[in-house]
Length: 172
Image (cartoon, rainbow, N blue to C red; front, side, top):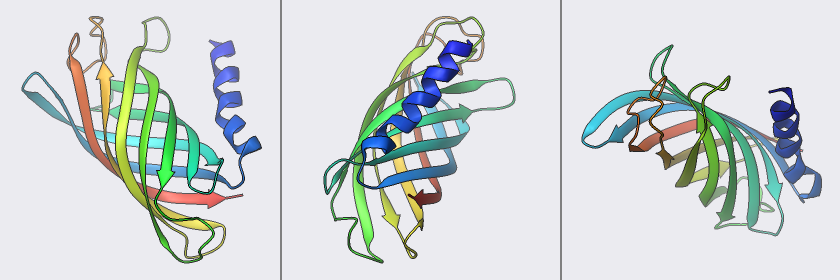
């Protein structure tokens, strides 16, 4: 387990080392998880580190989580690619973007297997100050859940976690 966390932290900072503009984002929000006609409300959070590689293309590595209640939910690692429709060079500009990514989630990091996750979504960034901005994102995290059922909301089914998150982003 220790090796996992060392690799996860290394991967989180790797995009920022090579990026033209690095960013740390803290997002919180909520939405719903659906599977096979059933649905439940969730809380969501994300801590991401990334940056731009070209003027409009970026990458981000995130620690992610969705929680139904204290005992049920997912945590995991996600790698996203983003395309920004406007340049980050323009000050005080709303920057719309689309995001696609792949990662994994686990409902119990101690012993159960993880589940593959795909992300599709989009959002807006706005930097009223040079190093501090706000960010809002909406999307669908598709979780291919296994049969374990320990903390999974709907074990054995493909789950769509539809949500909205907002938060702050810090440039470096």
